Image (tube, rainbow, N blue to C red; front, side, top):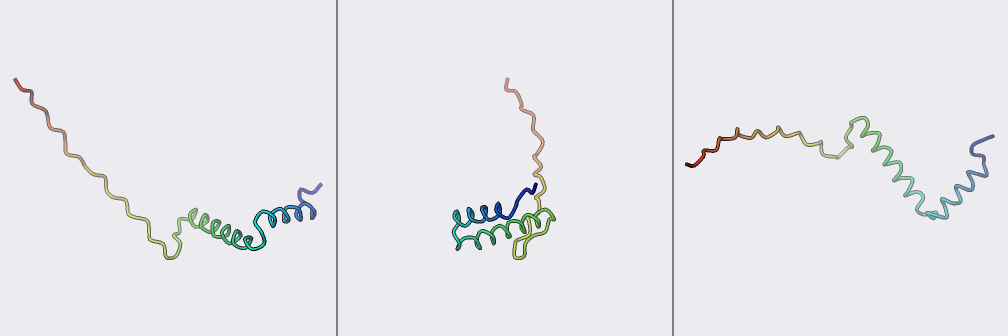
Length: 73
C-alpha cells in the first residue's frame, strides 16, 4: 500500500491552489526556499551576504567592592 498515490497528490495540489490562488504560489514557494536557506546557514553558522556580522560580546562590567557601612553612635 502506497502512502501517497497520484490521486492523493492531485487532491493536495487542488487544495493548495484553492487556498493560495495561482498567483501567490510562486511567492509562497520563494519564501519557503529562502526560509530553508536561512535555516541551513544558521545551522552552519554562516552569515548571509550583506548582513552585518554579529556584535562582539562586551566584557562583563566589574562592580567595585562594597564599602563597609559605618554605624553612627
